[in-house]
Amino acid sequence: MENVLAVLNLGDLAHAFSKMGMFPVFDLAYYIVSILYLKYEPGSVEVSRRSPVASWLCAMLYCFGSYILADIMLGSSPLDYFQHNSHILLASAVWYLIFYCPLNLFYKCVAFLPVKMVLVGLKEVVRVRKIAAGVHHAHHAYHHGFFIMVIVGYVKGSGVALMSNFEQLLRGVWRPETNEILSMSFPTKASLYGAILFTLQEAHWLPVSKSTLILVFTLFMATCKVVMTARHSHGSPFALIESWVCHLLFGSPLCGDEDNHHPPAAVPSSPLKTKEELSEGARKRKAKKAE
Image 1: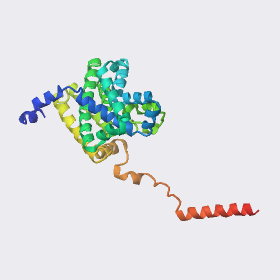
Image 2 (image 1 turned 90 degrees about the vertical axis):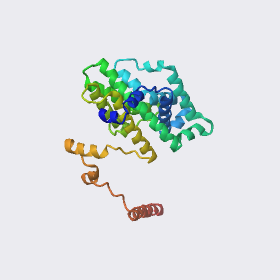
Image 3 (image 1 turned 30 degrees about the vertical axis):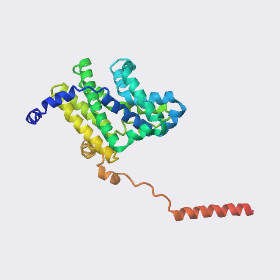
Image 4 (image 1 turned 60 degrees about the horizontal axis):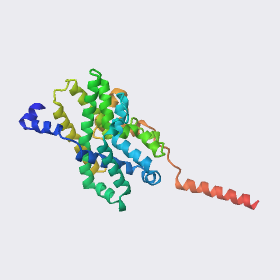
């Protein structure tokens, strides 16, 4: 990989990219997309009108949930990240504009598909940096704790997805079936795979520099998310590989065979039968009235 980048003269680009600051441009895009997804959640607009404090807390979880959860896991205060006043104020400004801007102008602008595609791509830059930073932080705390590195990097990249049930409680919703561990979305899966790659690189088992890995993985994540956003897709590029691997290792059904492994859903009663039952019920009621 390094030789290929040397031939393409991209080594310096990878190094400069890895040193690029995320605040304010990339972080702003991250906050916009995160809170935009919050507004998509059922009932979030009603909560913002009924209880602005609860809505603001949910928005902060969407923006900083990964830091909070990672700090708890590493024994730090969950409020530690809230010392960064500029980040909190920027995220709060985005929250206010998305939920309370007159005529929904700000929301309409950032939800406009071409703009949203750019913002989604920028958000993935921040996600990859967070995964790399999480693995690096865990490496300093637990030098040989490779599983801890993977877990912390995974948590840093997954964000509020792993805290979704807790965030739902703040909005007065309880949907345990939406647990991200039970049904992982593409960003959550990619964060796990990215955490594994950065852990291998941190342990010097992957012959690639960190800056190169950051550049390559960022390009992959940004491309996938932009394409998925453009196509309004919620699928995963890993689906086919995961299906075969899980089938071989765990006996899980293949994607195409799921319908063959599970009994078909109960066929609903035909409209004719339903009408007959309704007619029978009507006749019985008439007979009782006649009596």
